[in-house]
Length: 216
Image (cartoon, rainbow, N blue to C red; front, side):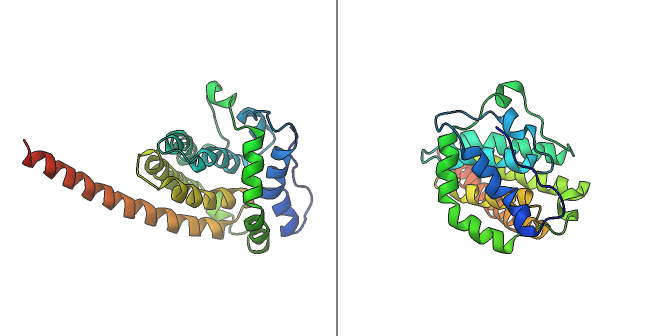
């Protein structure tokens, strides 16, 4: 599969067409039953590679099966977060993950579901505030939040896989669209989610510990 890459000094609108929307269109083109390998999807990407890998990692979070969604998505999100935290410039994947990926028909369904949001996205999102994406410190902070969100997604917390999946899509769009302002918003939302769920899980753990102690 050939991915389209941008050239010249096109407008923000053409840049969007070369990232989120066009990448999804390229992924959707072909045999619906074909399985897309991660190594092929990432081969022609540069700055967008982490965004694409995160997108593929987020897809399973929308599987309507409790436990399965987070169990598949969580580790992949953590893998992306850890690599950004370590400052890698391009994603690294072990072979047993690199040769796997989603079926094309899953991407088609997801693209169709996102058709309206993507049209709106193209009007408000554009490449800006590059330092929020390219600086070592900013990348590490993004990686840390993704790592923590991946942990939360992997935990069997009822009815949260869609919530975390939608939140992580904000990171996906920020990375693919090269929008530092959107990434700042993703930081705020991600940090809030980590704090809220972190405190909730701590309190739940204390309640469970107290319950066990009273019955021993």
